[in-house]
Length: 251
Ligand SMILES: C[S@@+](CC[C@H](N)C(=O)[O-])C[C@H]1O[C@@H](n2cnc3c(N)ncnc32)[C@H](O)[C@@H]1O
Image (cartoon, rainbow, N blue to C red):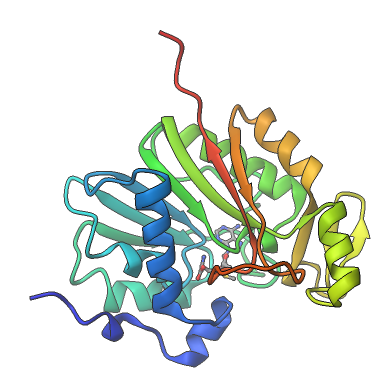
């Protein structure tokens, strides 16, 4: 008997702490994206970094089957507690864990630096990695380390979807035209909407993001620009989607 997914939707006051929006619709969109664009198979292994209250996980519950696995980790305990109480008991191959890593907004008292954190997984374990609305809350040295960790835990040929607010000429022109999206303040390649609370909403120069992944041995296969700055977009996610692939080894 399939589980009614509505029982896994967190209350709105919890959902809002992870960006709010239509929890089930976003998870469903990400699932279809992985299946149709990344060729996700039921036996694949998926890593969800900064998994929040499990909206990506819930989108995958009907599809991933053992030996397929889902692993989500997050620095903010309340979402993980929700997932461990409402999702994991029904799906033993879905795992959620707290990573006690410092984040000014979500985990301000931890002493573990995100710029030095080693993901608790072996090399080349995962077929697919996702970070949805996570690098939009982190500093450059932190996303540099996380990108290197993503490269380490992806198998050759594995793929990642990472969302950003990408600053480029088009985004700035769209913002000027529409007046939409965050008003970013530029600090070098780091842009924040709120200098008083810099990690609340972060954007990056597209050129930096491209160099970042190349430097970590990852290929950007495509960028799907989102509607955050007033562009037309049919997606549930307003952020830009950066699609990444780890090259296969030469024969
Ligand atoms: C806007 S929420 C998005 C949550 C989830 N990805 C989603 O789409 O619903 C940002 C998440 O990133 C997590 N986060 C921030 N810094 C992190 C870090 N260094 N490591 C892991 N997660 C982090 C936060 O705790 C928070 O759950």
